[in-house]
Length: 435
Image (cartoon, rainbow, N blue to C red; front, side, top):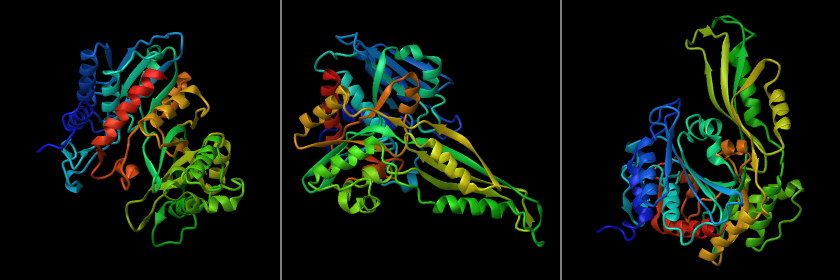
């Protein structure tokens, strides 16, 4: 017997999209067109005219505009990506591209990240209870899981006119249930993102035979630099969004937050916020994690060059400090350069749009506590910010206690609750109709 809800629109869309393998393997190797055509067909059937756009064959994006009743107001961009990261079927309980509905969950790669959200957007915009007040611009993008070169980045550079009038956007993550304590349900809305600072470190030395003493060893230099970076304790730098998140979470839990500028308060953050602490623990400071090393190839040869990769993340307003610190940590014997860097983002939390998202969540869950938060990673919002569009993370989902939301991202056995998809669709319907 099929699970209850398996035939509903949003669940059917989610399953159908998961079955379309749009794996992005990086370096231009991806194929989003099947999902783009599926989305375009659903929009067309609802009387919404889609545009399919490609930088390269198969790397397909979909953009459409839904006219509002008040076109003088700034348009709202609603964006979601169509690509997914690879999945190894041997490690999954159920086939990762099956889209199975089992035990009240839709299973498969992209269920959370983020074909479930694509499905909720489709379900919401094709059955809006009223015509939206603002123009809605819908963008379903390729290549978010790599560099956005074939997706949002390309759209922004080559087709900026499609986003004329857009002042704000909603996109990936945010609006999902966090069970902060028994009976305390928190819904964080993304109002910021750390910037990406991916780096390559290079050390040069004197090549030679491994049997001879070599004080100018490139491997030794790169290893020392990587060790210093990995061991560095970055100072706390509270942005307004993170400060508001901590205060909001403490209020929801009925706890006194104390002096946030006191280092001891940060040391006790995990105890203060409990299960909700991960929402802020990774965004109270910058970070730099070594992620790769390459040098040599033969045990008895000292190479003349060694390299390392470092994934850096930067809070708004701290880039100069971050770069000075990296200079100090690598030292004089190692150089570094960006392989990819993106700006950090911050959005106002006192805006009418934030208030509308909050109201939509609390209408669907009257006991909800809504707080802003800063995302540790990045999304396509970075690309759209180049057009002056302020981005929020809002992909609402109701989740049961114990559901490991963040473990689903790029993880094994990715799945999303059927009830969560239905809830998210209702929230988006209300928000898009009233914002």
